[in-house]
Image (tube, rainbow, N blue to C red; front, side, top):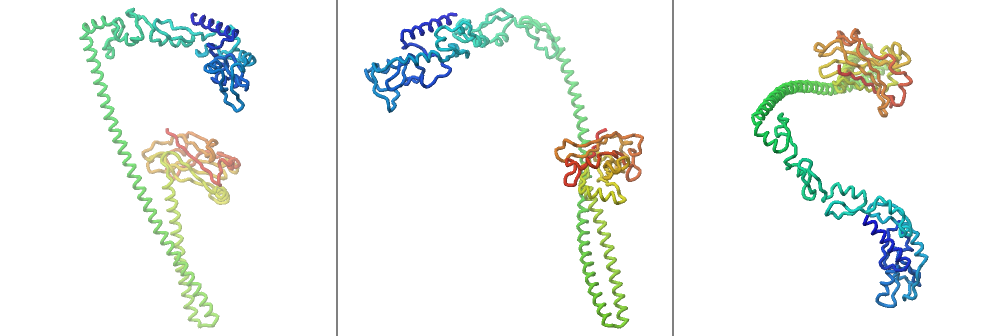
Amino acid sequence: MKVYFQLRSFKKRTLQMFAEGNFSTMQRPEFVSLDNTFICVHCQQALIGAFQTPCGHRICSPCLDDLFKQNESADCPAKDDECIPLTKNQICKDFTARKALLNLEVYCVNQKYGCQHTMSWKEYLNDDPHFSVCAFKPVKCTNEGCSFIGGQQQIQDHLIECPFLVKICSNCNKTIMLQKESIAEHLNKCQNQEMRCHYFTFGCDVTGNGAILKKHFKEAISHHMSLLAIYFQKLEVGLLNIEKDVKANSRENARIESLFQGQLLEMQAKMAILDKYAATELENKKKFVNLSEASIAQTLEFRSLKEHVQRQLQNGQNTGTNQNVNTLIEQILEQTSVHDREIGVHDVRFSEMEARLASLETRSYDGKLVWKIANYTKLKANTKTSKQSSIYSQPFYSSRFGYKMRSRIYPNGDGDGKGTHMSFFFVLMKGEYDNVLSWPFQHKVTLTLLDQVNGKKNLSDSFMPDPNSISFNKPVTEMNVATGCPCFITQSHLNDPVYMVDDTIFLQICIAEK
C-alpha cells in the first residue's frame, strides 16, 4: 500500500510539471507504439516537453537545456544539410506535439511486474481508475529481512521459495529459517521425527521418534536376529530355486542346440544335393550340346549323300550300287533316330531337374507359401482347352519336420465356381515325418489373394479342418483330396489392377499354430 501511494504522489508531481512547463525531472512512461516524429533528435527517446527548431526538428525540454548549457548558440543535433546554427530564442514550444503525445497509448506503470493494460498518457497522469484495481500492483515480501518487491502473482511464486521464509517443525515446534536449513535437512536430524525401524526391510514394523527407536534397538536384538534368520532362509530357498531354473534352462539350451545342429546338418546335406544336381545338370547340358551338334552334322551328311544318290540315279548307275546306297541310307536314318531318342530322354531329364531345383530353391518351412503365377492369361486358356484343368504349386512345410502341403487352383473354376470363379484349394501331401505328427490335421488354413499395389485390399478366406473329412487324415497316397474355396473370386474381380499386374498374380497360404 505504501508503494501505491508513492506512485500516486509521483504522477501528481508529473502532471504539475506539465502545467508549469518544468520537464527536467519528468520520467517517461513505456509507450505502446511511438512514431519517429515524436522522438527527440538529441536523446532519441520520447519527447518530454517538446520544442521545435527553425529547421523543423523536435527536441525535448531537458535536452534543450543541456544543448545551451555552455554557449548561447549551438548546432542542431540532427546535423542535416538544411540545419542551421541555433540560438535559444529561435526555438519555440511545440504544443501540437505535446498534445499528441498526451493522447498516445502507454502501458500501466506495473508493466515490469507483468501488467499489459494500456491507457492514454493523459489518463495515466490523471490517476486512471485501473491503478486502484491493477492485479500487478507491487507488493513487498512479508518475510523479515527480504527486500523483494513484485506483482501479486510474483509475490505468490516468491513466497514458496523465499530464503527468508520461516516454518515451524510439526514434530519439535522448532522455528526453521529456510535461508539456513531446509525442511528435509532438519527432519533428518529432528529427534521427534517419526521413523521406521532400520529392520523394516526384514519384517520389523515398529515406528517412533529417535528416543523410542533407540530404546527399541536395545530391547529387540533377539527379535531382529530372528527376522534376519528367516529372511536369509528365504533367500537361500530362492537361490536354490534359481539354481534349479538355471540347470533346467541349461538342459533346454542343450536340447535346442542339438536340434539346431541337426537342422544345420540337414541343410548342409540338402545343399550338397543341390550342388550335385547343379553339377549333373551342367554335365548333361554339355552332353546335350554334343549330341545336338552330332545330330546336326549327321543330318547335313545325310542330305549331302541323298543328293549324291539322286544324281547317280539320274545318271543311270547299276542296280547293285543303288542297293548299297539304299542300305547305307537306312543305316544313317536308324542312327539318326537313335540320337533323336537320346536327345528326347535328356530333354525330359533336364525338365525334371529344373523342376526339382526350383522346388528346393523356393521350399518354405514356416507354414507359409507365397505362390507367384506368371502368364496367367495363357495358363487359363491352356487349362480350358486341355485335359489338365488345374495347376499345382510347389510343396511347402508347416515346420522343418512338419506337415507337407501344396496349393491347387482351377483358373476356370471347379464345382459351384466352374466358369464363373477361380477356385483355390489346400492339399495335404504324403511327407517324410508323417509318422511322428498328430492326425487328423487341426491347423487353421487361410487362403489369400495378395494386393500388389499397397496391400490394403488383400482378399482372404479361412477355414478350420473338419476332423471327419478324409482330406485331413494322414495321407496314404501321394496327396489327399483337395479342399478349399470353389468360389474364391469371380473372374471379373480377379482382373482388378490391384490383383493382376503384368499378367501375374500372387496367392498365399498360411497355416496357423494349433
